[in-house]
Figure (cartoon, rainbow, N blue to C red):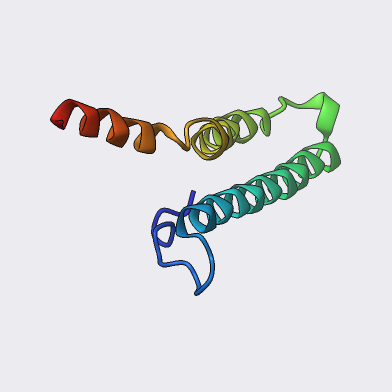
Length: 95
């Protein structure tokens, strides 16, 4: 997830919270697309260089980077409200 630009102001007339959610989701889709393309290329290299007769080395970057993609997905789609919920909880405790 691109945290550098995630909280930049939304363009005029756009809801800032929704804008940031949309940017995070678009960032995930880009991340996932790059992952699929790169993994496809690595597996193709493996197949063309002997494939079934050699150790399937692309499994390591597939799993390693796949874990990163999974955490990116969870952060964007599943836990995107955790900050807001924590803020609300703290505000209730304060008052």
